[in-house]
Image (cartoon, rainbow, N blue to C red; front, side):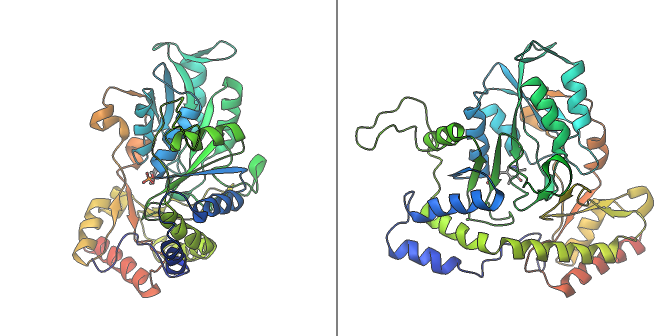
Length: 389
Ligand SMILES: *Cc1c(COP(=O)(O)O)cnc(C)c1O
């Protein structure tokens, strides 16, 4: 491939800090970079506490355990999302309830409201699904491709029905709200716990890693404890809970500290590159983009082109195939989670928009290192594909 979908940019202090970790011998799960990355992320997003982990998936898993979500519970989760948050619901033995998306591919607050009021009974402390009799204990909104979820109505519903909110902010580090009740706040700091990922294709990377943030000291302590095999003391190996080895290493954290130093620069490049794609392709019949909502600022982690097959006379997949021949990597989005084998038969509530939208999207190359002529080349090849059909 000449132009990859998403490649990391590792040109700052990464080598310097990793070398420091190696030279001082602190390469494993103890060491100053882990604490520093936790402090730096907490400060960056404006949260009181941050707990590092081996992955974003691990952070989500720890958050569900911190809330005591278990086999008698249900968790509302988007039908359109990378499958990781859905799997974590199963890790704790709970059932996912798949929810429809809005026009931004994000979980639809209107359908959440409908589900909670029409399909459930509230007994003053618990929201119970009328049919399954299970407790709707948590919601996991996912800020898809970096665009902030409409959290205001979701938090209202959650507060009314005493539901925990775990934000999957794994794709949206640096995104924030600009209007309304949460103006000035970062994605990941609106719900009770927010989770980030530093996987290789995310906006910053530690190779692999994650972070949970919260303002609640008890949840933070509990997640940290669970991530370290629930070890109660330093000498005698006392464990009072089933824990996990979900600790980030100091080498990974060293990478992360250097990457975070450049995050704002990455975001401004991402936004500038998106603007160019938009300028070149936005006016083409049958093409549009998923853009940030008017109440938020997006990190524009991914660039989602929406292809209306009837108007453009080509599908997203046809464009993908044409670009592949030119050495350009693009990708459609995930299949609907309720159609994935492990989740067939799970509850999917009134799915409508997700059916229509998920077959229309094509994600375009979005690396920070993308050059202007490469963006122009990609746009030109997309137009050529449309012209030739
Ligand atoms: C990447 C991602 C995760 C998982 O993060 P990992 O660090 O890869 O475990 C979870 N949810 C979403 C939406 C993601 O994109």
